[in-house]
Amino acid sequence: LGQGGVERGILQLTTRLPAERFRQIVISLAEPSDLAAEIGADRVFRLGKRAGNDLRLILRLARLLRRERVDLLHARGWATLVEGRLAAWLAPGCRMLYGYHGKIFEDLARPRRRRALAQRLLLPSMDALVAVSPTAAREWMHDVGLHRPVEIIPDGVPLPPPARPAARAALRKELGVPAGSLCAGSVGRLDPVKDQATLLRAMARVRAAHPELRCLLVGDGEERGRLERLAGELGLGEGVRFLGSRRDVPRLLPALDLFVQSSLSEALPNALLEAMAAGLPVVATAVGGTQDVVR
Image (cartoon, rainbow, N blue to C red):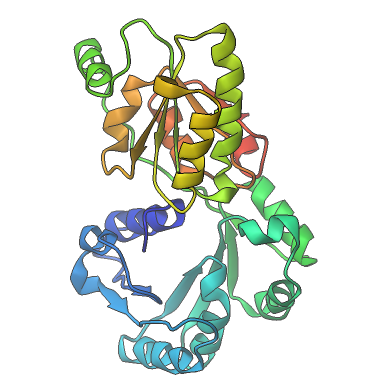
């Protein structure tokens, strides 16, 4: 339960589905972050998954499903596929839905045979498969080599209130964006699959002709040190600011003139939806569900 698109989708489901119709719990295989507080600590169960294959986790998960009388286990992402499927089989009456949310970065360069085999073996047994965009669904079924129906249920984001000019000016001052300059921004974890390095190299080229351009990078992650060094090597200086992980992204978006996404793979990027909901024009790589949204 870190700060990412899949996790924000879980937050949306657990806080917006009508409580009078659905009782929901969230099972975190590893230790959750403070996102658990937004979901409600009383609804989050920690199973403490150990590194590697943790077979006892399957038994703990199955006991939890039986004890809580779970009717539907909604597994999101690769890390929950094997343990979730096996545990659901051990919990009588528990059906299973598997949600696809994009490729794992390691699979972009060299698909993992074991991962592909696990999907071929287990996905046909699911009660339903869900993807967040048509393009992501087609890519998924092609990569796995399966032919079966996939339901398309796009993620949603709340519409923000209209930005007020005075608030925008104050926000740009707070973020160190000079008045009158063009400000681009990107939101996402600093991870190889998000490929912010390409964005920084593009910034260097554009700033050669338009030195007034600024770029704000919102997010944190394992790539931060490398990206900060790259920004220094490219001579971007004050042209780029790393804002770190923020909980107030909707408040920050009105400071931007342009949203940029340089990902190598996406199923349906929530950050892009939030930017478009805020009325920002978008420049993005043509990957996965990004293509559906931009079109």
